[in-house]
Image 1: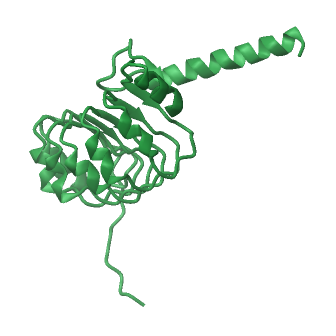
Image 2: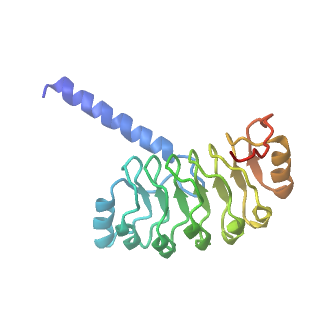
Length: 211
């Protein structure tokens, strides 16, 4: 390879690194000095050598299921799983008691996984750009939740239990088709919470007779 080729590869690597850092900046609860791992095998090797692994980024790994090896990372606090093919989460995820930040944007979820309701230590949960239709009635079991992002979904039910999340500070509902009445309902339930919502839709939802 010519020196120009090597220079191009170096520039591409630098851009990739910069992009990776950019998508990690601004995550609630994640400090600027956080050391990230980008490969599960590397993370497991470090963990087995005695290095605590606190942040793992498995974005764009084509995952259809979470790898069981994750449960070995007992110090893992931040797990980023953007842009995979996940549609559910395993029950053993609840055994990862150190996990506080879970990022699942741009996957294939059409429902809120039940296992999350057992993870009362989670502080930040992001499900942006999925296909979730409702927030579960038992969402108030997630008592440590501070930041919940559900932008770009199909949310059509906003249970009163949202108002019983004692530590919730931000709720991102941008780009859900909410009526003005739904927005007023959510705002009234969460007077101390920063709720992000798009302009209300003017549509009317009516039950249609089944053919």
